[in-house]
Amino acid sequence: MGRAYRSGTEGRSTGYAFARSPFSIPDSRLMSDHHARFLQLALHAQALRFGQFTLKSGRQSPYFFNAGRFDSGARLAGLAACYADAVDAAGLQFDLLFGPAYKGIPLATALACEFARRGRDLPVAFNRKEAKDHGEGGLLIGAPLEDRRVLIVDDVITAGTAIREALGLIRAGGGTPAGIVVALDRQEVLGEPGTTGVRRSAAQSVADETGVPVVAVANLHDLLAFAGESADLVHHRDDLLAYRARYGSATQD
Image (cartoon, rainbow, N blue to C red; front, side):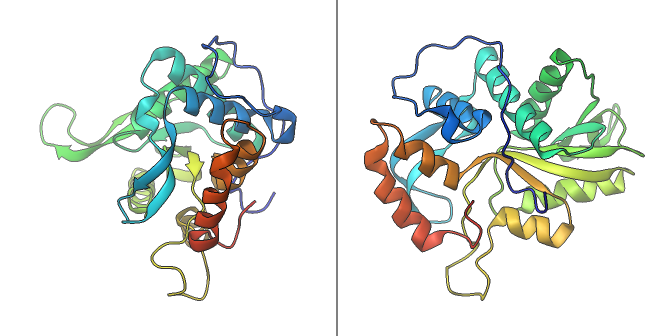
């Protein structure tokens, strides 16, 4: 499927029950099921919000995503099912899940539990921010990486610094990076638009520079489709389109 910035086949039922969302939800037939289901879960958890937000980059964004708001067992279980569907749809081949500190740790753990629920028991590993000089020591915790194809699980890719660090740790541990899966790809250019000839997002830059495919459960293109089909969210669509026109990367589907 080429560069796997996102996946696009029909997902599975999660098997988990959630309270009714306060937003009208678009027909999931308009996008693959895990895209719509993830965005619905994110809205319900207030992990996805609309308004005016100042990002770390200084940009004024009409939406904000914080995976930390998936802060209960049911929310994490639902999110993990969306990750698993996206990974399965992308067809990545891997033997171990790796969660970069800090947000990647619960995400990789939840995804391992979801795959176990589906009948596949996968080893999990993660890193510390600082090396430990006592006990088991080192930067890595969990299953050994040596001779394993490793899937990195994280929330987003911003500058790509944490992901590149994780790739280095995996290779140093004898593992082979097999892919990266994130919840949301904002599909934004790095730096100021127009300063370079190619409008590449952080996810595109990581994939192009490392040769490791990046899969997103959903991206800005999916969010626009989702908002356009929701009576409660459609009024945010013009702001999203304007933001994409200013900061969007070359690939937007």
